[in-house]
Length: 219
Ligand code: 5GP
Image (spheres, rainbow, N blue to C red):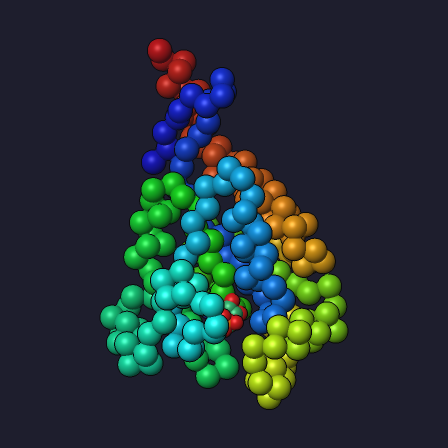
């Protein structure tokens, strides 16, 4: 439903919030870019906290970074259809709990998912209206260096992640936008610009605007 509100002297069209999918290879800096995006003042973004069977890294907080659960609990939730999408990534499950996503969108919030590419594919099948943004490394070498510098994984896991990243980079054409993570702030600002532009798309606001004109015409 589209409502209108008086906003800064101009009429603003309110609608369901957008679902924004940030994806891209592991180690590209999705998490860092997402945090910088959330630091931009005046946003109306909600981060969808994922569930995982991975063990928490040092400093990670349950219910903030992820919901950390056992494999059994995760598989039970799969059976119950409680994920918008889920994927197995380097030996662990990761998934997006569906209930909060749906509620937040209905409440007009912008919901941001930060997920790997298999999950993004599933979201694309279910939510064609979502905005798909591929965060890409400036080069493959940059990605390799980043994964090593992060130092959170054993060398064999890093190699596994790199091989996966090579395959993932080929999926770029399935996305609406590509944002190269040359600098975190630039990348975050470009994503914010995309979100604003998406709101102005006629497919999202055009009908509402015509309704609004007709209503005010009858007053
Ligand atoms: P990490 O173990 O480094 O936190 O995450 C590994 C990968 O899983 C990253 O690419 C991250 O974006 C992705 N990921 C995190 N949450 C989800 C999720 O809910 N679903 C999917 N499909 N991927 C996720």
